[in-house]
Length: 115
Length: 117
Image (cartoon, rainbow over all chains, first blue to last red; front, side, top):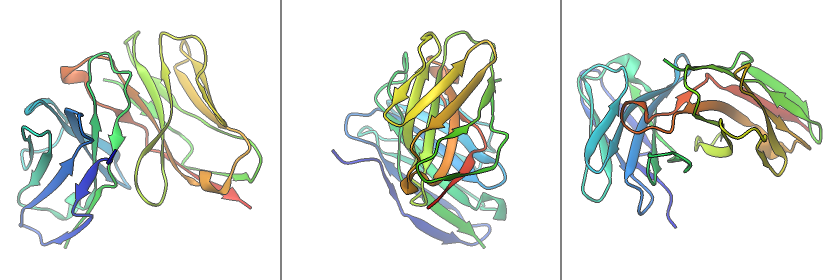
């Protein structure tokens, strides 16, 4: 069974540009969550999608957005990139979030560097 | 809001020895889940162990076990017979069983564990 796949693995962008990251969850998983990991702030929750609907959102500016498609694949977009957006972006998928006793499976992340 | 605190940024253990990683959390909920995740240099987060708050029995997974003290809001991870492959960053995380606004993992800052051969 294929795991969570994130593309691309590495990305270098210039300040002011926008970027789109992709996440393909494990087959059958309908919940996809995104996290930002930085040395200073650690792991911070961005948002969660379930059945194409954003169900939960973290405390990030509106420049961070996402969506989920009918096949559960998810994308996140960051517009007007800032140096502080340099981070490892992790995607996690899970079967269902109701009465969670299922684990969140993580991808290997996308390392975004903003120069 | 729930918070998770890992106060030790780094720890080191001799191969084959036992090490305990500490974690405390703050919540007003009575029902929740706690996790320890491992992040090796490959960056992929791997679930090590999970504890349901309503279960009094501490979870164990082979060489990994937890000491869950609900009243003290403490959740430590014990690694027995440490192996070189255990070297990684370890994150303690909290989650409620709800959907919607609470359907997220809250992580601690993590602890870097090194294993000395």
